[in-house]
Each structure stands twice: as C-alpha cells, then as structure tokens.
Length: 301
Image (cartoon, rainbow, N blue to C red; front, side, top):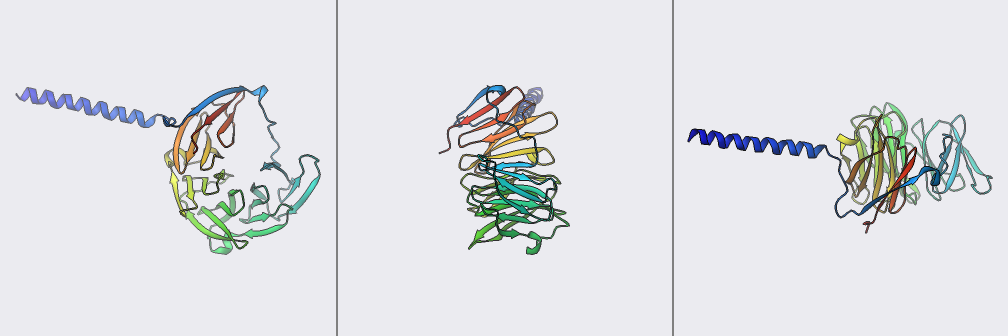
C-alpha cells in the first residue's frame, strides 16, 4: 500500500514538473497575433519598392513637410518640396535634440530643456519650459517629443536625474502641464514617441519600458518592462486610430510588435537586417537590405 502511495506521488510529481516546464517554455515564446486579428504578410523586393532613404541627419520630414536643421543644430528651415523654395527659418539658441510636426504646427525639443511650438509659417506660438513649471531635473534636455495631429497635446521625455514623461494640453491657446511621471531610470539619447491617429493615446520609449498614456482617462502605465526596458533602439509609428506599430532593435535581433489601446497584441521576430518602420491606417512596413516586409491587419473597427 505504501509503495502504491509513493508511486502515485511520484507520478503526480512528474505531471507537475512537466506542466511547470511547459508553462516556462510558453512564457518564452513570441506573442503571436490573436486568432481574431487578421494579419497577412507579403515581401516586396527592395529594388521595386524603396522610397529614398534619407541618410542626411540634417533633414527632418513629417506630415508631408520637409525641414532642414542647420549644421550648428541651433536653427531650422522649412522648404517647399515641390519648388525647393524657402518657406521660413527660425533660430532657437540651443541645440535641437528632437522634433515633431503636424500639418499646421511643428515642435522643436532643445538641449536646454525647452520646446518651441511654431505655426505653419514658423512663427513662435508658445515656448514650453518644464523647469519653469517646477519640474526638477539635474540636467534639463528633451529626449523624445510627440505632438497630436491637431497640436492640442504634446508629450515629452525630459531631463536626467530624474527623467520624466510629461504631457501638456492646449487650452485657450496656452499649453499647460496636465500629467507628470517620474521614471526610475534614464536614457541619454533621442528616443521614439508617438500619438495614436485619434490623438487619445501616447506611447513613449523610456529606460523603464514603454510608457503608455490614455488622454481620455488621464492615466499612464508602463507596458511590459521585461521586453522594452533599457537601451535597445525602438521605433514607434501610429497604426490605425488606436494602435501603434513597433520595431525593436538590439545588436543581433529585431522584433516587430503591435500595441492597441494599451495592450500588446503581437510581438514576433523579424529578419536581423530590418532597419526601418513606416505605418499607415491598416498596415506597416519594415525595411530590409534585400526585401521589405509588409504586415496588414483588418480588424480596426
């Protein structure tokens, strides 16, 4: 009888061990798209579908607009893409560290921690200065910057020791601080940040992980710090009204992902030569040395 009980405990132990091992293996697998997330992939030869890759870091393009950053990085100009004529130029008095633009506005983050908001003609509308609003950081600087399509909200990764995620809202023409989150770690290079197409969600790469902010609720949270914390390069592009496409790059690995309404829907490996990301309403493209990968999803609504 005792032998029978010992044999039963032994079999149960094996079952529990195998179950634990299976759970561990599953936890290490990529997050593949949900069954109801219809997603297709096609490859396009690079030679047949390659936009001109701009290697000149002085050129900044966004929202169908073209800007040139001066060689000393303390001023910028906008040019008409069709006529190459100069539309405006602006001096900032500090080195430009990052920029964002919409159809009618542009935002310029500076080494001294300020953000200049310009109208379509390059006229200064507002200057955002977190230090003047009581945000204490040993080294003020703008490391990431994003602006909603209509310019009603601006998101900033600000300062070192400590570093903050800051969200500003425009009310009666003025931008006021509406949200501040102090981070545990800090990054010391330009980072990616984006608004969703509907302007309600914000995603920022931070040292602690991906920081997600829901404007409608006024709440922020870190997403999967185990996957996105640290110095790994991360590109973020809006994908549909409430989604984002991601491309994470380490020394020898590349991963693509989709985040929608603050949830990680997909995360999977892509070829190690992947180097660029662009997204539209229903698809995103990852550039490669030999071919581009185009992922399409159809369940936005």
